[in-house]
Length: 553
Image (cartoon, rainbow, N blue to C red; front, side):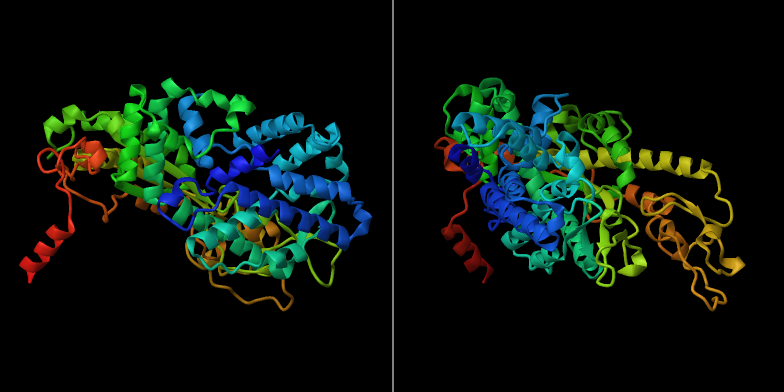
């Protein structure tokens, strides 16, 4: 049992972010301990709040065990393994670390003959994935399946732990009180609900998740090193054959972040190309960002379809680019390019996760309902998801050429988008467009007293004479169509058009050639004895730096 859980000590919680944020050295083992502790705390709190729920010590132990074992199936560098490497190494294979967690749990129970019944084992596995339909307890106690993995709104102790733990590791000072949220939780109508006064705390939790993904997990250098590690693993795969080990728990248990060291220490000729890539990581000779842009979330499929390595090379060789070096055009290959399309959201895609959270109040502690925005904040964003596109070059010699080809693709996509916008039917007067993931509604349905001249115009409408008795505003307006009160439509042509415009902060000439350290090894080991002055980059020394300082003075 120790082997299965302690392998997580060798898997970084934030994967390769450790190469960028030295404080992010915590591992999956620590995280699982935290989730197990919070899971027991939450289950115990729910029982103490309402003994009629029938929560027993056995239920609490199963919930705690699910928290402790929920990440048993993570591979090397956490999500890099299942989100990037496995799809690349085994195209078409549908595999997630949750499946591996169940596989590892079953094998651990069998190997160590643990004192657990088959019914309890099935319950633990169902709790790990949050699937209420996998056992009868899902009908009588559905709230138990919202503690470790909450499929309804994503508000679970797994998120509680990793958000606070990751913030602490990278030096962020969060303003989230997990103990407050746990003590606020209670079960109403079979669901875990929270006090309405904690709605802003919950929103802050979801926003922090988005912020961590944008600033930390998807940092440009982190993604660059992820590409390099994946390239090294794909080079090593024909020789090591590690991808198929995801089906073999006896071998998979030994797959950890140490895999990189294993390849690096090897002397096999078949791993020479993989070692060269790892050498570049060690010497900080990473792939460089050529260009980047943020797009609306609904454009993700289009971006992934049209902005590919092959499409950029085809555009470079199409002859439509001007000012480029034809010699470089002939040399450019898809293998020189890396493309990252990262979806960023608050936890539920384009939807506001708060729309699925139920609340109670101090005055009505046994009645739950979903909250209107006016119950906690009107300062909600008009969009809860976006897509971050980055283009990398693996050899800086092609920097300008790759950017020129990519930007030409963007121009053509923008022209197609402009044509579709022009052909789009004009909306009828009195219609508020769809916003925030909900259905479109007419202004008449909103039951607002608006001046007729302002109906259907963008911006904030002017309120006319207000009725003496406040009118009820339906939830369909407050959560789905705030455009009538001046919130911008996230799908507006103006927003999309700006996304297809060129990034003015990254522009370089088409013939720009950055230094190409990939052909000039920095380390002594890679130079194989060369002094670095004849065929490589001259090594910097304190003497050289001091001489430069003397010349400058």
